[in-house]
Length: 359
Image (cartoon, rainbow, N blue to C red):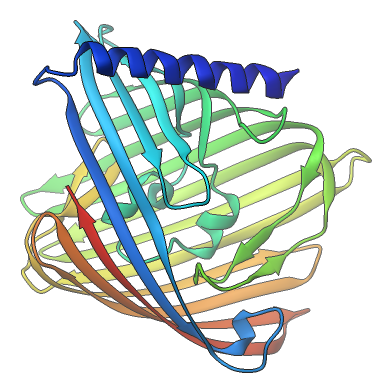
C-alpha cells in the first residue's frame, strides 16, 4: 500500500513539474543546469569478488539535467533527472514555499537533512567518491515534507519522509551552528538524527570501498528490521584555502526479534587550494570552489559493522584542477584495508580519475 502511495505521489509531482515547465517554457525565471561526470578506475583484484588480476573500468558516473523555476510569489520548484544508469531516474522533484517568516517548506522528493558530506552536491565534492560511512549510513533522497529555517549563525531542518524502496517512514532532523566566521575563516558544528520505522523490511549493509566500478565488500547480515536509530556529528573549518571536515555517524538497527545491530564510522578530510580561496558556504552546507586552480586533498575513512566483526579503513590522497566554473579534473589514490575480528586480511590499492563538466 505504501509503495503504491509513494509511486503515485512521484507520478503526480512529476506531472506537476512538466506542466509548470511547459507553462513557463519561454520564461526567464526557468534556470536549467546539468552535469556530466566521466570516471575511469584502476584497482587491484582485491576490489573484486572474483578475479586475480587488476582491473580497469570506465563509466558515465553521472549525467543529469536540473530545472528550477519560480512559478508564483513565494513558490519555487525543482526537477532533477539523471540519465547515467540503465533507466531515467528522478532525483529531485519538489516545490518550496518561502512565504513564512520562520521556515521554508519543501514538499516532494528531496535530500533528507542528514550529513554535511551527503548534503553537499556531488559536483562540489572534494574527493571523487563520498566516504565509507556516508555511503553506508547517511539517508539519501526520499519523498516527504521538510521544514528549514534559521539565521546567519544557525540553521535547522526537520522532516517526515517515506523512502521509495519500501514501506518505511522516517523523521530526520539537523542543526548546524556557525560559532565563528570572520573574513576568510569559519567554523561549523552540526548535529543530525533520523528515527526510521522499517516495518519489518529487509535491511543489509552492502557498500563499496570508495571505488564505484568495483564490487561491494562491506557486507553485513541480512536483517528483517523494525526500526533504525541514526545519529551524526559534523565539524568543518575553513581558512585561507584550507578546508578540514570530519563526521562521525552511528546507527542501531533493531530486528523483528528485538535483536540490535550496531554500525559506526567516521572520516577526516583535508584539502588545500593553492589559490588560497575557500569553498562557498551557505545555510550549513559546503559549496563549490570559488577560484580556479589546483587543490590537494586527503582523507581517512573508517567503518565498522560491530556484530559482524568487520572493519574497513581507507587512506586516500588526491589532486583536483578546476579550470573554470564548468570544467574540473580529479584524481584520487585509495588504499583500502579490511579486518575481521581486528585481524587484517586484505590491503588493496586503486586509482580513480574524473573529468567533470557542469553548466
